[in-house]
Amino acid sequence: MSRVRIPPVMRSQTAGAKEVEVDGATAGQVLHNLADRYPSLGDQLFENGNLRRYVNVYVNDEDIQYLDKLNTPVSTEDTVIILPAMAGG
Image (tube, rainbow, N blue to C red):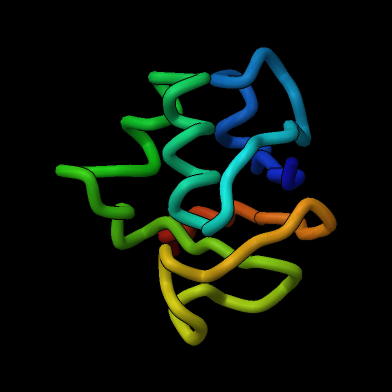
């Protein structure tokens, strides 16, 4: 299972867990399995089956947008990091 780091703003959806272990061979499978486990978190991550544009995802500190997006492979040693974009002034 891959480790998924949950950002503080989303931890209320995971009962306060900072990190959870989730199965999946790709970043997309990991995130969808995470959303299946925590449905309210799924609403924050996905819209119409696609990753919301303000949600950034990294595998071992590499942005999946510059890799293979949701098809980026992950292994059991990998850490998937969810980092929602912040806005404000």
